Length: 428
Ligand code: GDP
Ligand code: GDP
Image 1 (cartoon, helix red, strand yellow):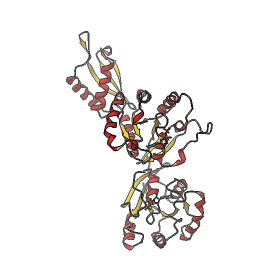
Image 2 (cartoon, protein in one colour):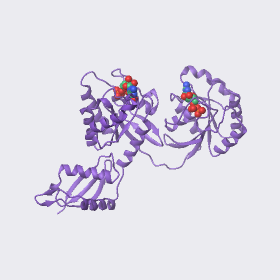
Image 3 (cartoon, protein in one colour):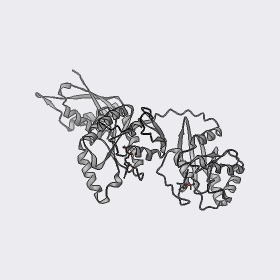
Image 4 (cartoon, helix red, strand yellow):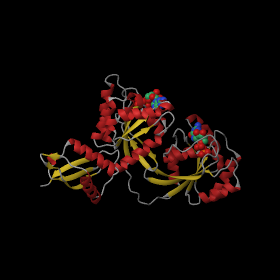
């Protein structure tokens, strides 16, 4: 994997760019110089490329470019094949910028000059000054508003040798946000990807029927399906419409985020959760607008939710606030975790060990004096995990017993939150 370093003096937006490119938003970004420590690296996925990005921001101690920083920086970026040199031309170039430029020229690595904070075309005038650094055509970007990033990546790739490692294609995790209007679905979407580009117009006819949004997070690709449905709000039969729309989204997703507000949970939410679950997709209950719950009521609200959501207690819960980015990381981490479990395969030997112990511990249902005997178990499919259990007579299996067994499987075999299916086969 090729390495690319991000270099530049404090406050030009290096860590904002780093986070934007690797698709991570929770890292600290602040106005104070020197917030980031030392050198951070992260895996970036771009089209079919995998690049290790390094943010050298932590090496700076102040605004001065000193020999001690230079030495550390030289070591840190030794095996980088190209350098992204970030500047803030709206602030004007400083002596340190020119010193860094001289140093980079001596290193002899390809340098891509980046003018950050070009938030709109009216800032393009600031680009001219960067020609004077002697690295050619500067790329104008806005790390904050996700502008110019494709052009930047094109330039980076032009400066890298071909990457002939053969990477297996990583399937994206397909997600959808469902829930009643106004719970904060589009706000959460924006908080996750941190850009306004997904706001879909409310004007009828201007949106295509399905709009998918793709982003990277922690080395994983995500696709949010059917974002058009998030914004559309027909005047009549809102909930009925939401259900139809959600059904389509669920079919196209791997994992579902069911967004709720603590005070407004009703049949609609339970219906949606069951819809998702019955179609074999893991559901995460996202309790949004958590910032509106006063501190002293947090515990009581959690208890209230336990009660309200008792029928869908299989679904893990995360607490979020789209207005201050709280819990966004949890949403993504939980989705990754469930997705991996949903795709997992359990060895037949482990399943049969479990089945044997289980039957010793717990009585099976009785039917006119005869009881259910489970003989053998194997996993036939993943996504959702589907188990075949061979038994003496499948007529002995009650609905309640099957539910019970599903819960045990989830609990004992580390499949919490994942829908599991059981197929019964009678054998003699
Ligand atoms: P670093 O010290 O170079 O890593 O810079 P940071 O990424 O911490 O950013 C410094 C400041 O610039 C923060 O307040 C960011 O919000 C702000 N910033 C970063 N990128 C942009 C941008 O594209 N446009 C604007 N207007 N501000 C930005
Ligand atoms: P959607 O219809 O589910 O897509 O909901 P929106 O994202 O349009 O949000 C509806 C309203 O709730 C808007 O006024 C948002 O600003 C507000 N909102 C969304 N998320 C939060 C949150 O976490 N906290 C607070 N206080 N307000 C939020």
